[in-house]
Image (cartoon, rainbow, N blue to C red; front, side):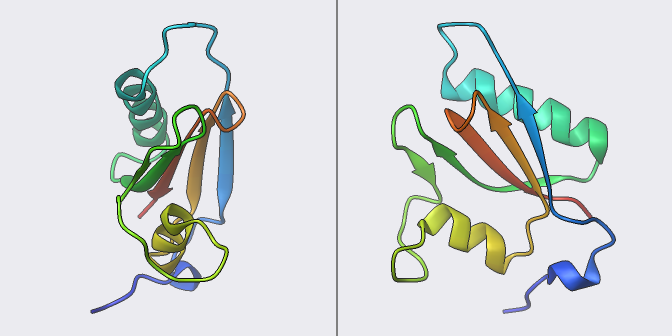
Length: 99
């Protein structure tokens, strides 16, 4: 399998923090907001993984890597992620690759 390395990418790793006051914020709404923000920054941005600090849910929903590192982060790292959309300080985190 080929790996897209971040050293080949023109974008440095960046985190965009968003604050949403909607108390009913759920994964679908947060994902739509993150996608809109990521695509505004790069129309070709591709989501690699996500994690919900609110529910503990993550995707892809299988273990990868090893040790004490979160699988959603390992998955995104080995695929060269370079953009994190962080909603409400970790309530929802989405990891993207900007091309």
